[in-house]
Structures are given as C-alpha cells and as structure tokens.
Amino acid sequence: MRNIFLIGLFALMMFSQPTMAQKEKWVTSWIGSVQGPYPVGNPSAQPNLSAVFPTPALGANNQSFRLIVRPDIWGKQTRVRLSNALGTQPITFENVYVGLQLGSAELVKGSNQPVSFGGKKSVTIAPGQSAWSDPVKLPFVQKLGDANLEGRNMAVSFYIPGLSGPMTWHAKALTTSYVTAPNAGSKASDEVEAAFPFSTASWFFLDAVDMSAPTSTKVIVGFGDSITDGTASTMNGDDRWPDVLSRRLHKAYGNKVVVLNAGIGGNQVAGPAEYSPTKPFPGGPSSSMRLERDVLSLSGVTTVIWLEGINDFSKNGNASTQAVIDGMTDGVRRLNAAGINVIGATVTSAFGSSSAAHGFQEQDDKRKALNQFIRTSPIFSSYIDFDEVILDPATGQMKPEFVPDSTIGSPGDKLHPNRVGYQAMGNAINLKQVTSFK
Image 1 (tube, rainbow, N blue to C red):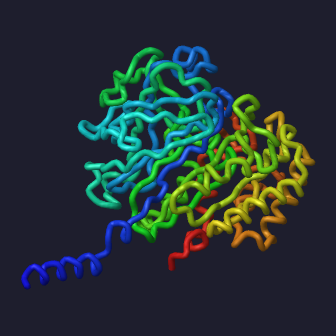
Image 2: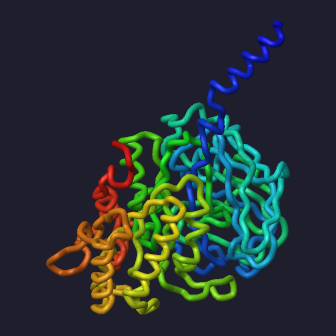
Image 3: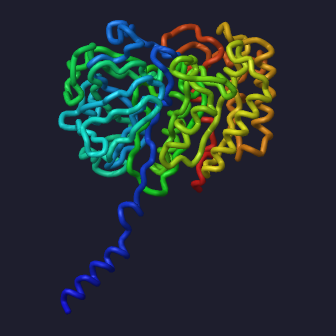
C-alpha cells in the first residue's frame, strides 16, 4: 500500500511541476553573420595579419583562436555554432572551450569550460555546413540576469589542426579577438593571455551563441548592412544602434528581451546574383541568400528590424528601386511565414558622401523612393524613421555632428553615422513598438 502511495505521489509531482523544457528554451544571445572567404570583406581597424595567416587560401594552420563576443543575456547553459559555410574543404575543430573574459585574451580563472559535439571533443564540419555544440553548463552564472555578468564578454576558444583552407568569417567585428601564430598547436584550454599573442578585429568560424532562457523571452534581430554592422562606431565600445537599443530594453524590461546584430558591411538586398567561395563579394551574400542562416535558423527570433538598401543603389550595386522592393517583399513573406514580425527602417542619406561608390543624386532619388515604400507598405507591421533622425533637411546630407569617424578618427564619409549618430538612432526607437510589453 505504501509503495502505491509513493508511486502516486511521484506521478503527481511529475505532472504538477513544470519541467525544464516547459520553463526554458534556447534563445540566440549573440550572432556574427558570416561571409567569406577571408580576406574578402570590409573589416574596420584590422591589424596586419600577414604573420598570422600568411597564405589566406590555406587558412589557419595548426593554430588556436580565442574569439571575444558579448552575449546579450547570460543563462546557466550555453551552446555555440561553428560554421564552415564559405569553406571548400572539411574542417576539424578540436578542444573547443567557452569561458569568461577577464581582459585581453586572459580568462577569469577556472571559468574555461570544455565543449563537446555529440559527446565528442572534436567535430568535423563539411563545406557549406555548420554545427551546434552540446549544451554546456556555466558554473559562473548564478542566475538569469546576474548583475555581475551584464555587459561581460564570453571567450570561445578552439584549435584547428592542420590546414583549414578558406576561412569563413565576419569581417567587421569591431571587437578585438585573439589568435596564436601558425603551428603553435592547441592552446584553447589555456586561460592566460600569453598563449594568444596576436589580435584581430574580426570573428572566424563562430557565428552564433545560444543561452537557456525563459520561454517568454523575445529575440529582436537588427538585419542589414554596415550601418547595422557599426562602421564608424568605436572599437570595443558596443555602441552600434542595436547595442543602444539593447541597453534601453534591458533597462526597461530586464532580461525578457534579446537584441542581435545581423549586419554585414556592404550587404545588399538584390545582389549579388551569385555568391560562393570561388565568387565572393565584399558585402557578403544577398539578404535573400543569407536570410535562412542569419535569421530563420536562429533560436527564438520574434522580430526583425530591417535596415538596408543604400548599397543596392551605389555604383557597385546599381539596382532599381523595384528590385530592392521585390527582394524585401519576398524576405518579409518568408519571415512572416515563420511567425516573425518585421519592422521596416528607412534608409539614411549618403548624399554628398566622399565614398567613391556613393553620394550621387540618382542614388539619393532611389533611396527616397524606397523610404516612401517602407513608410507606406502594409508588408511591414510598422516602421522606424531613421532617415528623419540622421537627415539634415537644409543639405539633404547627414547632420554634421554625425559625420566624424569614431573608429579611427578620420573626417568621416557622410555615409556611416559615428557613435553620436548611432546613439541617436538607438534612442529614437519606441520600445513598445519593437516588443509587445505593456
């Protein structure tokens, strides 16, 4: 009789208490939209990497990487996605670790945790493919929203034995990461900075980090080009417009929401028509080609803010307004079909830009026509008027205070806003518009 009672009590507890699966889900907490192969792309403030990758076509050579990323929220468990999307040969990753950055390439002592793939310490990824790791417990995370981890960086370290071949990367990280010299061997488990003497302003192979979070967590993706990627903002400053929006949302709603940055410098909506390791383009694959990998395959995405089009109208793109409208319309349809809400964002002025491919009248006319579509089309749930924030009505150009470059201190190009401009953009967004929170 007593055994029957205990079995019944256990069954009652199982059905009355929520399980882990009911309480939490995976949400993507950081992304770095991939392009490639290295060195095709538009990095900012990149150190000279000739001693690190002397023959780009051969890629990494028996060396280790320590990539520094900032999760938008932390959870007690994480998993990482490694990508060989633009590679031409299988790549083996060994001794993968995740830890907490102390400073430079140094980690907080005891924080470096081993990562497995299907229970194994290594994974081989075929060309064009990617792989999620197994869940990794993070003992240094006490609870979701731990104030001690707000704004802290994660270090994802791994070792590539032999030659990797062409390297998939995200050029414009605007964040300093670290790498060993060729033939330095496996250093991923080392927590000291001396193991990683070289720095880079780009991310390689890593393109997503998930965290365990409550099932109600919302995930917002900023999708676009260099003005989302953060060109002309500060190195290691985390002051792109999605970063500003993230801090405002966390201040208002805590860790109920995540903001991700899916910008690629030079990206286009309508072009290029073809993109492959043998036919790359500095701006990465078109929005249509990368939508699945950079948005739809991520965990828990609820909303996309789409800011793009200025590169389509440059001399490098030379697309029609209708081609960009058609590309956006198709993209919104695909996102809506996956249950993702899409907010349009008006394209900011490049009129008078010092960039050789930008700044001419025809480009500005096309930009204005696209903005009229974004402001009035029913395909978007709403729109954010970044153009109004950045535009100087007296000149039709960017407001003067937004022009000087914050990355390297140059005069600026009247195409990319600086730190002040990105702050204005991030602060102009209505928080209730991008969430359903009351």
